[in-house]
Amino acid sequence: MDTSQKLLEKARQLSEGPGVYIMRDAEGREIYVGKAKNLRRRVSSYFQKRERHSKDLALVENIVDFEYVETDSELEAFLLESRLIKDFNPRYNVLLKDGDAYPFIEVTWGEDFPRVRTAWRRENPESRYYGPFVGAGDIKGALAALQRIFRFRSCQRQMDADNPRHFRQRGCLNYHLHRCAGVCTGRVTKEEYRKRVSGLCRFLSGGKKDLIDDLRKEMETAAAELRFEDAASLRDLVDSLMTLNEHPGIDESLAPLNPQTEPDKGLKALQEVLGLDEMPRRIEGIDIANLMGKEVVGSLVNFLDGVPFKDGYRRYRIKTVDGQDDFASIAEVVRRRYGRMVEEGTPLPDIVLIDGGKGQLGAAARAMQEVGAKPKALLSLAKQEETPFLAGRHEPLPMSKRNAGLKLLMHVRDESHRFAQHYHHILRRKAMFGEK
Image 1 (spheres, rainbow, N blue to C red):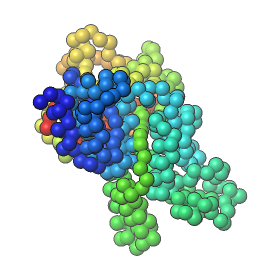
Image 2: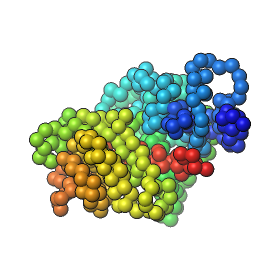
Image 3: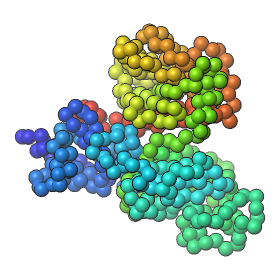
Image 4: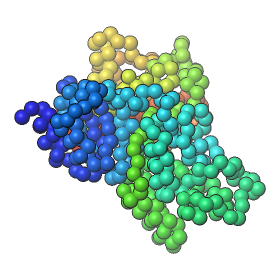
């Protein structure tokens, strides 16, 4: 049985549900990522004998294996596909090479009542952007499905929370069709509405499961406090997220997180607080992800001049640690990454940032010492606390949350977390790298 026949047999074992597939070449490299409404039918089509366009033929001839991720809905396959394209940068996924040619989803987070719309460029530093997406028509379908769930506004009205003239008694058509929470009617507060849109952002970033868990906890709290109307609203939101397959289908994806500050300002601020002779150019961020100690993975992201440098991203499947041990896992990634750089004489990054607190930082510092690596600065930054620590210094660095340097570190930390979670997400659902 030749390779195509073996792969066809493997494809015929897939489910008929939606998902994303990853094609690999003889060296195990990801060469193509695609999405499917029906995984079995779509993946099988690659290995059936028929006439093909020369471009498709070149791809098929290089496939020696594939992996896949089942999703709960076409909408989630739509969001996951491009995110994986951004992570893997596969050779044959050429459609998203020119980001300026394809649209984004923009959430105008800088407004009191953020709007959600299609945008062709990332022009507003206060907005949050997701994409680019291959087709504007696909975005329209995605937003139609999501608007029914999160009831965000898409109108052009100026809405300031402190200006009563911006509100009116009668809502627009979307409000009466239950597609908008009714911001213009004053029936939803700024805090309530932004919480709703924040949930949308979490969903777009791949956090559906955690979002549902948090909503269920809120629902139980509301019911216990006899706030039955709030509990019912939360229940409806959870039910809608759980039944996404009942909403219209779509088609495609996501990118690295957007900067939280201007890169030059952030780098200059880091130079000052760290006392560096020159402005830092390269920052690397490391994070660990696991599920109950299983499928532990590490990620390394690379920032050059304050912006993500995708070619420098790396993924690590933890090999020497049994169970859940973030300290040991971080130490393994540090030894593998920087030990190799020391051996090869490759210049180290100016700053290495560990996602975590003083414990994770200590583990990284010891591993650096073991391999003889001495970056200009080794830092850690834990989520929520947002308190940066420098190796060798007992007290945290004196950086307020408005500091441009801290905002840049948060960007690096969040991007390393995102990258780790995506790799981990694949491993959780299907063993990768040839494991069955």
